[in-house]
Length: 312
Image (cartoon, rainbow, N blue to C red; front, side):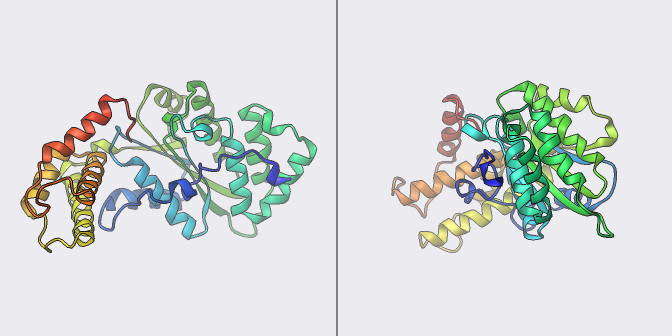
């Protein structure tokens, strides 16, 4: 009966369609990740960690990194990565059922509790988000036995601002905060979004003690530039090896200029590397070992923005 639940197959962090999405490179985001892990592994009252940041600052990569860590440790309860206009991951219609299905997979002892709920009411997937949450997530989790020590699981929700209905965003934030009421299991919710009005409003309705937050774009520019430097050096080294370029390519001065132009935006850095790789592969640049025109890379991003292509 569990397999009858309607789920968004592209929602999990490790869904097939998301397999090429990156995680943070070693020696990047070090302090922030330590802060997130300390919260996730802790026992304080803040059941939600809200990472907010402007477009292009790397929120989804951090979410992917957190999800991968706890998946490998067998403490990832579930993940849902929203994507505007992405069908089932663009709205909340299958949010709760997808979370319930993943939780049941991650916590085998939860399966029969979810099964019992569906056996009693087969129409739950068509009910309101609140009723789905109560019957498929909260009540089943509350029935787990403690076995001497409270188990802890992390739920990762990325890009909640890309959910297509503001009212559903408000509801989801309230429902996630109810995880604090669980006694026999600890559910920590790591959530990312842009700091848009519906999200800010939703969190203003919660007591401050129920969530922690962090503003990603307020990190010291020197730290961000260091992380972007690591990103460029790693990716350009790979590109150089792919195309048998000199070991010193493209040179420290070019990398320094790229970091300066990126201006703290990881999305620009990623776009620049993709542009360079595609240009070399298509042999569209004159001398691949010579200087390339940085303005063209930035022009590509500007063109994508002008065309209305969404970026994170």
